[in-house]
Length: 392
Image: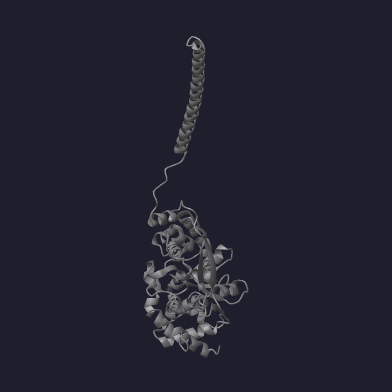
């Protein structure tokens, strides 16, 4: 029996071995394919991770609020929102500011990466002062006289002590009054006293509305007082002068137009700078600078209440400081204002343009603006007394 089943068992064993070998080979093949797949997948992941590591920068540390602010303020940072600035000034400064403002705008854009949009208003200093007090939201005021700026201060719009915030007691431009005559000076006008003569027609602005006109009045009064030696003599002299004035214009620009464009008057009192500017524009001008004269000092100030409201204090203060720079002072001088910067004033072109005045009085010589306004320009004061005498 055992011999009968010996061979079948051997065949069965061979078959089993074959099946086992087949299974083993199949398993090995499958394992190798999976291993290769896993290997390739792993390699692909490694390459991908390496690529990500190579192209993605390490994130910077989180910036503190202070460093974020500094970055935003940098000129190389993103542009900041445009800022507006309203300048209110007296009429004859217009040309100077139109030359200066673009230079400041360019400088601020370069340094702060911010565009400054200027709104400008020009007119008689007294009228401009009232407009600001009544609601014209000026950020910076450049007026003909410190008394006007003080009125805005007293209205609560400018902080006290504004004169000490900038050089020169806040004075940013200067000039002197001059007497303009017709071609050939047919009335032979050489000094203030010549304006008292009969038959001389004088053009000047109204001291009630024009800062320039107040300077004109003070120059006349100063000369008459020094000649006559008393207030009474000075009042008489100025009454004769204003009797020769056919019409008081609102501001210096209107006075200039009346004289040059409309042909009114034998003489015109105006700022030296206004006359220089007219000459530069092609108008033939004959004028004299009296040796006894008065320093016209024009202040600048930031309107504190308005800049706080508008959020533009930084740019307003930067603009005011820029007006004192040699670059800006040169532009003032080019259009006839005497520079407050000594380095600019000593340049040859300006030394020749602005002759030295021998006897130059100042506001301080007359006791300051409070005393001046009370004595000369308040209701019922010297100017009103003169107008009453000539029944105007």
